Image 1 (cartoon, helix red, strand yellow):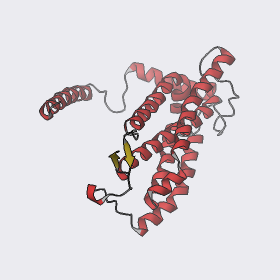
Image 2 (cartoon, helix red, strand yellow):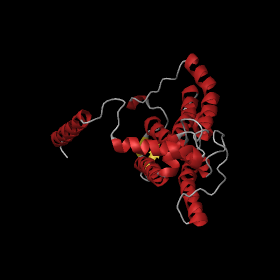
Image 3 (spheres, helix red, strand yellow):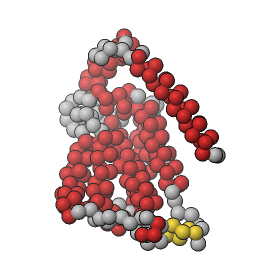
Image 4 (tube, helix red, strand yellow):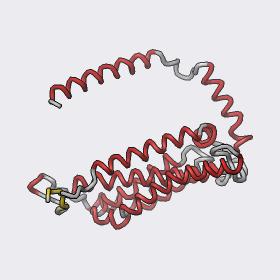
Length: 254
C-alpha cells in the first residue's frame, strides 16, 4: 500500500473516531449524576456484594462474580494479543541472532547511571511485595489480579534497568513466563468449570465465603484473582522480553 493511501485511510478513520468521541462527550450525564438504570444497578450491586458474596470491594465482585464470564473474555483478549505480538516478533528459520549491540545499525544502548541502577535494585522487592498484596487483597480493598499483575510485571523491568538484558533473561526465562501466562489463563477456565460441575453453573462459587473483610473471603473469587494476576504478569513480562529482543538483538538473514 502506498504511503499516501495509508495516510488517507488514517486521516479518515481518525476523523470518524474523533467525531464519535466528541458526540459521546456531549451526551454524558453531569458529573455525579447517573442515569436511572445505572443508579439502580449500582444500588443493587452495593446491596448484594457484602451479604451474598462476603466481598467488601464491589468492583471485584462485579468483575469476578456478577459478570465473571465477561471478565474471562477480557482476559483472553489480552492473552490473544500477547500471543499475536510474540508470534509476529519471533525468530524465523531464515534469521540468525547477532550480538545484542550493533553500533553500525544505531543500536548502541547506553547503560543506566549508578544511581538509577541502585534505585532500581532497591525497588524490586517492594514492587514484588506490593504486587502480591494487591493481587491477594482484591476482594477486600480496591485492586485484584489485573492491577496487581501489572505491578508484578514492573519488577523484571526494574531488573533490566538495574543490570542488563542477560540478567532479565536469567531471572525471567521465556519458557517460564510463557508457562505462567498459560497457567493463569487456563486456571480461570478450570475454576469456572469446577463451579459448573459442583452446581451446574459456570463460575458458581464452590468454596466457603469466609468472613467479610477477611483476606480469605469471597470464596472462589480469591482464586480467580490469583490466576488473573499470574496471567497479566506473565503477559506483560512476555511482551517486555519480545520487545527488548527486537531492539537489542540484531537479526540478519542466513
